[in-house]
Image (cartoon, rainbow, N blue to C red; front, side, top):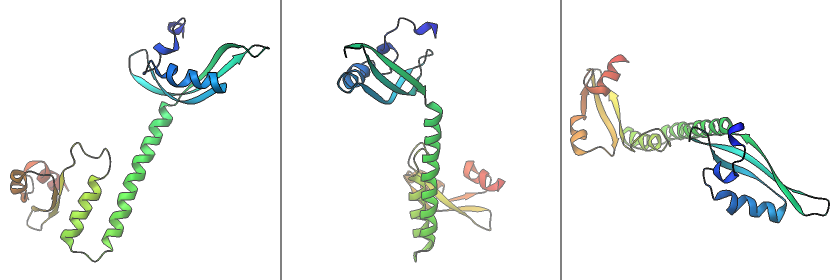
Length: 173
């Protein structure tokens, strides 16, 4: 692109020292380097690229230039993150299924289940939550919790359908 003409590669990297510290020494010593680099978009955001850098030499073996080929890998990285998150969720589901086969009380099951669910990266803002059972009487009963304050534990021990966000969710089934 026209806006990149005359700019040094340092100005394109999210870490301006990366090329000098990593890429250039490796290219000088080994003739090539390839790997992932975070670069700056013209709007200021960063995104990953795959860089293949090669030292170009003259017919006497003296360095002439460095050739760099870049490929935007942002979509691939996003797909990898989604696959990783799905894998972690599947691992928790498998663990829950295995846990259901264990000879433990229902209360122990809920406590372990909550720990497993809260172990999923990116699932929560804060590592706290609870598990309710819905009673026939239209009341949610807290069966397991982690990280809740004493006040919240007391207020949410039994929640009527329609009351607060948990009760509203239960009411909509």
